[in-house]
Length: 178
Image (cartoon, rainbow, N blue to C red; front, side):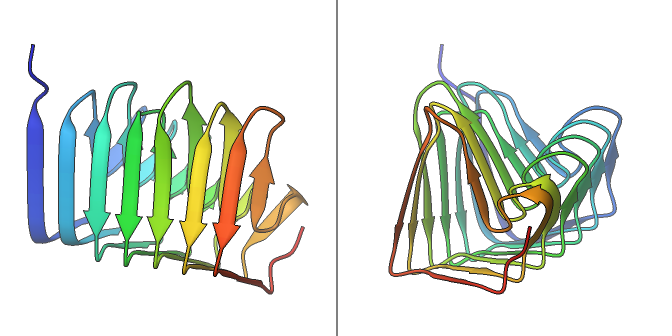
């Protein structure tokens, strides 16, 4: 069975609310391409205030903007449980998770997350102000910035659990606090 596909270009997704996950967009095993898309002021009672990527989902975001999204659990802007998440030239700012991953919550059994030319600014969570990575999550940050993010407990910029991997190169990590 072929996966469903969704392509969104030059669009704003704002002011939406989910009683569970994915306040702005919920991807359930599909292939999603977002180009020059703003995901703003969305809320989820569960995970992924702006965007939720489920199990076998694959998402590519180019020149995106996530601003002022919130989740009552994990992933204020983005919650990723999918096999592929790629962000290039994207800004994730001013988003809040009540639990973990103010900007990005990553919980993968397989697959990778690629963050290129991506900035996490002023996000908040209990752990992982910008990024929370767990299970077998595999994140690569390149030419990116993690600036002024806050965790009330651990990992102002990044919280990474025992079996997860984060590779950081040519990236600025500054002004974060826990």
